[in-house]
Length: 171
Image (cartoon, rainbow, N blue to C red; front, side):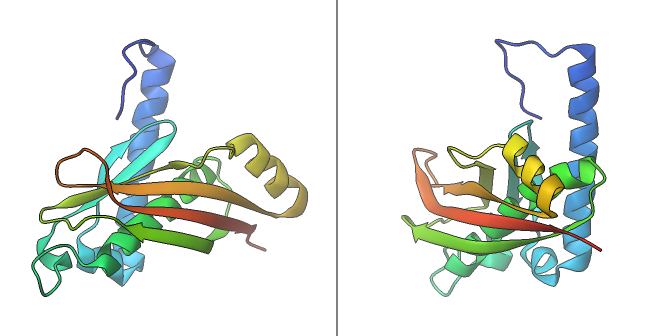
């Protein structure tokens, strides 16, 4: 769980953070049970904060013929991460929706030679209030998500994904 030192957590914030972490761990277990690729990649929860979610995967089951991370694994981890970022607040609110990626653009910027992680957050200009207002009014909503995989040095991204995720209420 990420903590902002400028704004110490209140007891309510700590309880909310703990509940969110438990929900995120349950969501990763769900992904590993229901999405064979997530299990094969050995996807794990890395971090969970109020506005971000991070997943990680080891290099070994995700290596290409050169020994670095396979591009398909990078985009898969970022897509799963973006999906989870949208799915988590829906589950926390008890809203049953089907969430899927509508569009995405990926950029590969550097090879990775070690275990890697994806960091997901809402894209600039997106917010949850608009998303939930649209979902409540129309039964479906879309939101833009930005994901990145840091390079081995941690000095910038090795890959990025800009994606639009759509949620549709289940009947």
